[in-house]
Image (cartoon, one colour):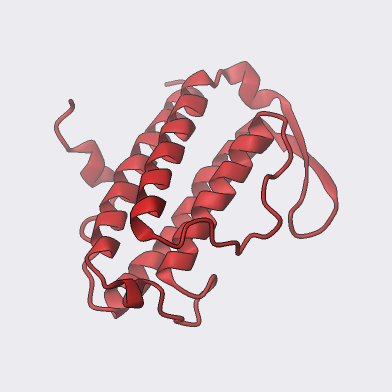
Length: 168
């Protein structure tokens, strides 16, 4: 198995679990989704915005462009329906990016300026792509915890469950 296949699996899972969790969060009231829970980025809605913003930031970096937002906590979409639609578009962009990856590209250097402080760093595309998916996993864990605290049901989140689904 080539390393690019691992990223394709991550991308497929990313789309599947985002769609599933967004549907679960949709069942909450807007008030509950935006409730300040003391969590990073304040609320479920804030975390979803942060994930969308940072994913778009990584896609920009991969394209050799600067990070397009001034703050990691910026609320891009106040309306949850719009946020869901934009999440689906960005997940499709991630899938297209992953489909373009080659083992050679994954070994190339990626240089960018950090958001947290004005420092330029270099790492491989491989590590950057791993961070894209690792970051998603980290914050989706926060979303599932908050969702359950608010009485929601996150359903099955395991990668293995997605892999057992019938193929299209």
